[in-house]
Length: 230
Length: 99
Image (cartoon, rainbow over all chains, first blue to last red; front, side):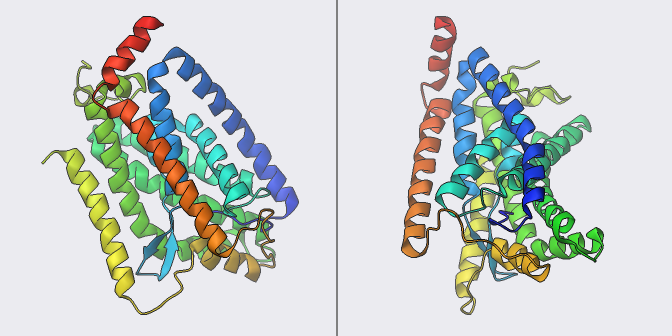
């Protein structure tokens, strides 16, 4: 999903940055406001930032395809912090990775942030909210969010490449070819991400119901799953 | 066994299984999808990746990834202790009272 330096024409790179930047800035304001109002949630924000940083730079081998890829951690961050703060975390993480680890790029920063921090975060959070409203258990919503956020991130990367580089071919044909090429590696990792996201969200809710309630995890019908919230 | 532990064990088991099966396969380069998919399709469509502005390679790249992982791990562990350690809730109550 890390589109490398120079892959996108500069006009596309600038357009992607212009689209991603408002999400990152609004998320930063949300983080500041939340941290000032409730200092108790700062460690959760720090934990999510560190987790997304490590996980999104962790190449995992997938024997089916013979290639490596990394999970994103963005579904977990979007559920626990909300999508906009997750977009800000993505922006900071991808900036460090581009500057220090030759992972991604500065010209493609906006595109990578939009794919992971906006498309991935909102897709994951949307799936979680929809499934919870339908009355599914916490673990099911979190697992679906983890998997969908991962796949949506890669779908977004494929769309970015298709829109920028399709040339004479149709965007749809190019998108489908690139997205399909991601799938043998990314589907097994989506299952892994589903398990980790479900485990982490369940863990936070059971061990720190106070923080879970403050972060809005009790806003859907099955409030009884958050201990102490009637 | 609690559902939390079950989910964490399932995730870890899947991760370990991937590594074991991968190690048992014939030699392969284990190229990342960023190169195997993104850069390959981009090259087919007429765009080559530039050399990164900060171009770390070889063992220096290993060093950078190891240091980044260690720093990320330490930060995560520190925050984890604050969130879930034995005195975490007591500290939060004290902070709220101080505020």
